[in-house]
Length: 127
Figure 1 (cartoon, helix red, strand yellow):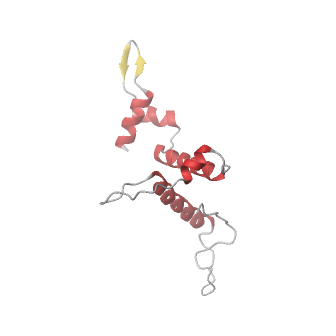
Figure 2 (figure 1 turned 30 degrees about the horizontal axis):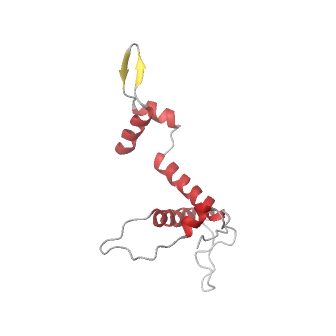
Figure 3 (figure 1 turned 90 degrees about the vertical axis):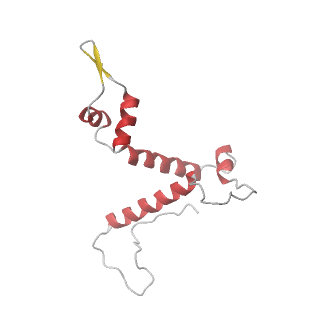
């Protein structure tokens, strides 16, 4: 939260009051962003953009760039976290949270292959 507050103070800037400038308090920042979590907002926007790309026509340039796979290999060592990897991770977290929130006390049919699945909630996988 400290880093988030620093960024918000930088974004919204200081307040001019009675001829002097001062930084915004945490309460003023909360009131400005309406008590929303900026990290969740950014994640939701990223997932929204990902869904937008997936729904685009194949002829669009953004879709073509997103679908393009390089011929070369990635360098040795620990792989860098790619935008798409993070989006897929967040997507599975959101999907899991929606499944748990939708039917917290639903009885599961054991042994039928439907464990952990909910027939009322349909989630389309991007890949």
